[in-house]
Length: 349
Image (cartoon, rainbow, N blue to C red; front, side):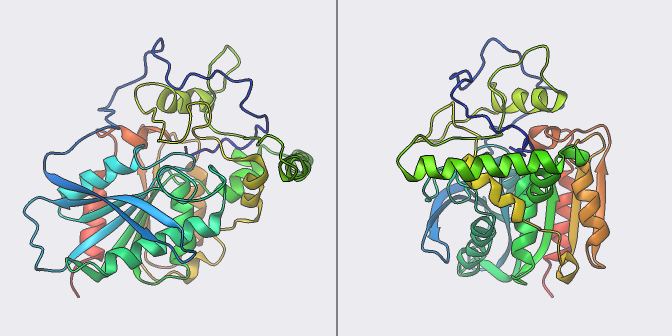
């Protein structure tokens, strides 16, 4: 999700098993349109292997009328952590395709239609590799200019895209929206709300759980969007619930179940503790655009990345927007800004 949600280590077994709450009225203001379908682009399901021979599945969007005998700029769009391409990234991919780009919205490994066992596993290195594999795929299409490929990472994918770009200069422009540094979020919590003792407790629980699963016991899951709200629910829990557990954005991919969506496995989630996407971010020579909502609980991550990045960088704050607002509220999402950024930095040289 932008699963910033990092603090819970309880399994989901006690949670409600309903995937979508039809009794709750979601906030559909500011043009919320997660399941947008464009009549200005064509969509083709595609698949390709990453470097580990894992099958990655995505939706390729091509503007109608695109000249396929010419090489065009392309953008790879990554979904929020714990989500799938049908949540936010397909919307962004279609909107950017309407503006003239070839776009690819992909499911990260272990999620959605892409391969990877166990399902819902966390592997930041493989997530980053998926972005590079997407460059491999797009860069070998006759209608894509391999020197004009950019990436757009939403929430957790912002960090994964940065991690990939540090060792893949083929990514010529990098934009992030509502970025989560999943490493810092898991190590420290939002605004350093997690103590070292709490972190050690989470790590110890995950380590012990490995014995359970190694000997055939039940898999335990963590974090993710809550399945029900009560008087003690936090503002962040309510924000994610409004998207992931209601018709506004709920989506259960084939082979999964409503109670498992958004929840990574506990034993793998601690791998985020060793994930430092902003380390050496200054070595990225491609232009970078960090977009965050003015009121986003995750704003600190975009600000941190901006401070550490190299010379070609911009921090763009969306007035009045929260974190999840920029998943689907088309009246708030700065598509014009994204278009100008990618057109300028993916133009023919």
